[in-house]
Amino acid sequence: MTDASPTPLPPPTQNAALLAWVAECVRLCQPDTLHWCDGSEDEKAALIAGMLADGSLHPLHAARFPGCYLHRSNPNDVARVEQVTFICSELEADAGPTNNWMSPADARAKLTPLFDGCMRGRTLYVIPYVMGPVGSPLSKIGVEITDSAYVALSMRTMTRVGTAALEQLGANGEFVPGLHSIGELDPARRFVCHFPDERLIWSYGSGYGGNALLGKKCFALRIASAMAQGEGWMAEHMLLLELTDPQGAKTYFAGAFPSACGKTNLAMLIPPPALATQGWQVRTIGDDIAWMHVGTDGRLWAINPEAGFFGVAPGTSHQTNPNALATTERNTLFTNVAVTDDGLPWWEGIGWEPETNAFLTDWKGNRRPFSDQSEPFAHPNSRFTAPAAQCPCLSPHWEDPQGVPISGILFGGRRNTTVPLVLEAFSWQHGVFLGATMASRTTAAAAGATGVLRRDPFAMLPFCGYHMGDYFAHWLQMGLRIPRPPAVFQVNWFRKDADGSYLWPGYGENLRALIWMNERIAGRGSAVNTPVGLVPSPGDLHLAGLDVPADRVAAALQVRTEEWGQEIPDIKEHFARFGERLPRELRGELAALEQRLRD
Ligand code: GTP
Ligand code: SPV
Ligand code: MN
Image 1 (cartoon, rainbow, N blue to C red):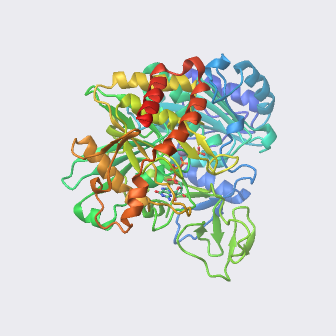
Image 2: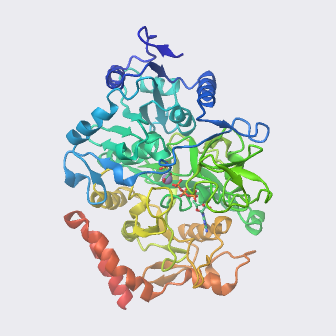
Image 3: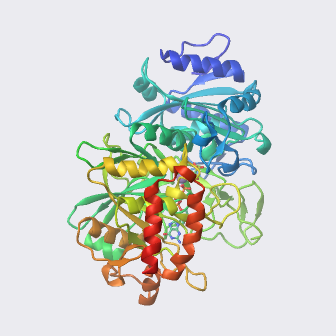
């Protein structure tokens, strides 16, 4: 299995391009050992044993969390790093105003010395993986080279790794190469570079999630979005869910929400009892990324390219998301959560409190009494890495090779004010305007300040691999290419009252918004025509069993013209950044919105 140079075993592929690239990376990084990952159980056991021995994994309570481990990342390396994430297109103009740009030549010149010899004394893992169901015509192959056993272990859960990927690749197939080294974990020597023209990824100096698991944001969003633009499909930061009505009819929704803004929770929603009794059900297809193609039937079809969930731990409880808790009871890698002396993973908002005199070890590895509340025990961006197949509410269609047909697209975010609980766009083009102008408060998923309101178009601000203005144009184009386009909605579970409390209970209760959207799609539900879109009146929502005062429901749904008026100057500033590349249709939508607000 492990292949000690200088007498290596024959490599497990005949793919000449792959062999050449691996040889080039070996020459550059000079690892002591080369290991081709095959995805076997033996390999998993060996990875875990090695990490337990070197202290990078900690066992958890073996009976209550079988096959589960805790990993603590370097405290300087706990989230995505947008400031050092680069799109290395030939022309700066093609990266656009929302991305950091470096020329491909400069990126190579800067990173080559970092990679030079960086794996001395380490193992180089070659991880062939499939994004999407194995054998699906919509799936794609990536190969990650890394010196991190944590990455090698995580990729097994998040993607389909090993022999299956090499078989699908074959001798002549194409793959997206990604070279990764944790380097010295020095923030000053940390870069995540994407070469969209070559479809190549180089990531150095971080071992964390989206910076290091290159199949996820680097390939499945940044590189894939650039591929999709050229090829007429879409790669989006979206959950995928299946809604079943009391008659058994299924409707599929895709939803874009910025990082740590509710995709996992919505995808795993449990209906409130009054609606569950009537037969409403939600099943999960995916919780973070969707690849969508126009089907021969004229609908938009979506696959989840991932095989696992890299989900936010804090706030996950039996109240909010019991399905996520059940998914993470076994074979789960927890990163930067706290742990009790008994070996139970713990985080803020888990729904139970240790004894006041109990001790916990926090995410940095410091053991302190639970009564010491000076700082959080779990990092706010602590996460679980768990196999999708363990999710109790996983849809039987989650691996359908052709995907699932999408009838509704949701755009959501964290807005204290202005955006109502739910509204429907007047048209696809108006829906693109809603996506292009959506804003949300920043979260701990990326390094930097949290709680700052920023425009995050389509929840893709950190993930669009090319010029965002061209991306808007691509969305408009797709509308013309989808004969039966999904309806588009905007949602906001995070609106607050004057005292700063959420107006809407969220989580399972969000089903009520989904049911209204479902009725609109079916041509049944009624709505009020407002300047910003079609909004339900409280009477249009299915509110049976909801324990919220009527005036709060009304406030959550309210469209206040003066609040929307205040958006206009900011939207203008936002649009101005895209210059010539802002599609004129969006300028038109803005003018139409201003006119409707004046009327
Ligand atoms: P990424 O994995 O970063 O892309 O995030 P995500 O969009 O999947 O976010 P996730 O569902 O993990 O939610 C992040 C945080 O928002 C968690 O702490 C949740 O508890 C909280 N959250 C999710 N849905 C709701 C909701 O409906 N209402 C409120 N108040 N909080 C929510
Ligand atoms: C996000 O930040 O949107 C995530 C986590 O889903 S990461 O994989 O780190 O990007
Ligand atoms: Mn995400």
